[in-house]
Length: 436
Ligand code: ASP
Image 1: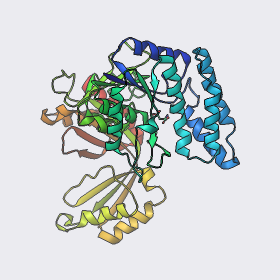
Image 2: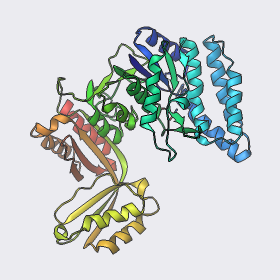
Image 3: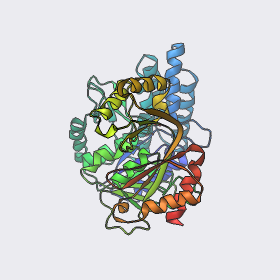
Image 4: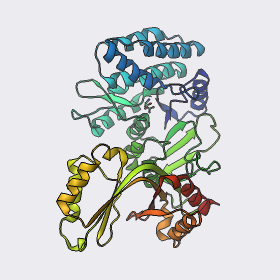
């Protein structure tokens, strides 16, 4: 059986919902459906989830949710009408409005987009609606309760009909609603896939899959046909945003493949994400190139650092005290650099620097702002000579100065730091070096 998760753009219009129906009806294996709230219908439009957060903010400011609720009402009522559904959407929206107005949480408000979308889609497909609050469980401390959830999800297998489940949320032990982070319906899909033992987790979105690199930078970037869970983790952490980076955790152990598919181009095979890609022919040792701007590097130098016991620990304890998690930490014999997101250092940079100075008395401490990180990812790189040489030759030829290099110990990943002004050109140079 297959689990199909449909994203916000797939739920945005009556036409796209009809398209979902065609996809579901074309394969009887597509029994479990997870949905996002309706997303943007056009450039500049607002996602229903954002309208719901706005409605909650209105309630907090004025004591009552206002315009945003009316906008949500219009959208859902129009969808139900255009799809000729006999659903009293007004009545459902009244209940949502009531819930928001009677001081439920922001998570409750945000979750209602998925809730309403699932009710609507279940009606359209003739599938049964199952509320995520009944099967996706969080612990008292707010962390996801994988074991209880899995036991509850397993029970879905005894239901004979198709099922539609809202993504993005679940419930705490006291039954209040709790959401995952933004884009979290992808995680719900993965959880359901694990629980029902799906043969594949199809993640239907509005692109054909993962592109080898950001298509807004390399317009003709090719599509990845297959990549591994680990490669996905590296690439999505570094900014490739097709799938929520936490989506692989629930299904990794059971080796359930994820297939990214395009609702608007269903004949495209999309991108397949599996545990082991070694059997698949590869066009290049590099699987993908991703990156992001907005990083700061703190570089420390101290003579004999290599033999000073506890140096690294003391530096990292400063970061821990300020609640900063670092991105990378390339080290030399007497040097240590820590890469941190600019956001992570916002407002506390000077305090952190002073504290590090106090703790380890470096000979020199340098802070480099506006660093862009680029990850070149691919399992094949480990046993292929010359990959790094090719990357750096391409950057040299493009006149790009490399500020930092870090190779993960798994050798499936080379991280390069360049100045933000060079970011786009660096991505292009590396892409064309490998994919011509
Ligand atoms: N609707 C939520 C969001 O916009 C969750 C999701 O779409 O996955 O973040």
